[in-house]
Length: 506
Ligand code: LEU
Image (cartoon, rainbow, N blue to C red):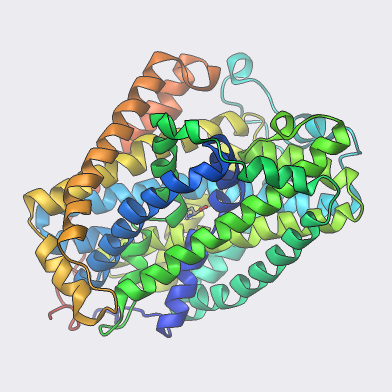
């Protein structure tokens, strides 16, 4: 007897969990700088275009697939058409790559929450502390991929894995749903306090000026539009299985598009709030260092682990800012990481018909080991940076492109999905949605893929040695596709969910 498919406790828990997935590191450390660099206030235009013409339509697309075909990504695509199963596994494997590095950043942030409380890095020493004392960074060009274990990274990483394994093992309702019910309100409160506190820092107004001042010329630059579209997929967690999986746990009679709009706008709201908080703090940092905001603005690792510690050292009440900021990264990160892992767990559960705990352990332990092996060592940062760049540019974008083309043009499923969305939904979709998914999305994604390809071929990524980029960049993204086909070729377990979900027929 196949176990019954799990479900979220209610639509609200689903919405909160979907927001939990969407709101993550991307919102906090990527968006503010993408917006600033892409024209400040003027960036709102490409951003809204990307959200309305690609982000939200693809979110509906994922929801419709997961909810109509009631399965993890491989199962849902397989139910659409047997030959489409590899698409699902490709999405699962993208999540495997993201999971192993996403966990590491959460572990760093957890340590920095602690460091902030006592300014462990020693004011003025933030940069050296991060690279030399904390990560013990070595250069891949000199040492290759190192196996030297760095305990101050490895130990919190084990803790992060134990926490998420615990949540995952409890299942969709008691684990994922409940974790989001607790962490999301907490995150919102912490973040709100952080933003308000940043606004009172001296120099905050200059930071906000820099963030919002519109540079209209940026709109003529195709790269700005590309960055808006590129950002939105990662930020909304669309196109790599997460929303397919989560929506498969929703009751049959659910308003899908209404939920999607709530999730999308909550995610954007959070993003803009993060921009305000981050730039207010950067304004303070610029003033304290006697330079302008342009001189200190940055994103990603540089923002979180160098600029923010500097702000924490210099601001009055800096430790509180640090604890709130890094604590927010940890909470936002965990609720995203569990959604990434659920894609993998659900896929295996469906394919093999295994129980929750057995599947969770089978998935998580190897992932935890890989993540430890690659990222608790002195060359962590190069591997992480390369894997992130390539999986975004050629994993997420590529699978999204192939999925919309296959579903729209080869399987002709858009009418089925439209009907499904419109059955219960408060916001009807129609011709426009089909055009956005079937025509505009392929064009935009195709453009992004080609420009990304040209850029990454024309100069070696990140200045790393070419053997290194060949393995962790190109090799990795190509391996994902090959393994996806191999996994699809494996037979479905006797107790798998392939055929017999009574709720699937409708
Ligand atoms: N949407 C998440 C973020 O913005 C990432 C995703 C991979 C879960 O960080």
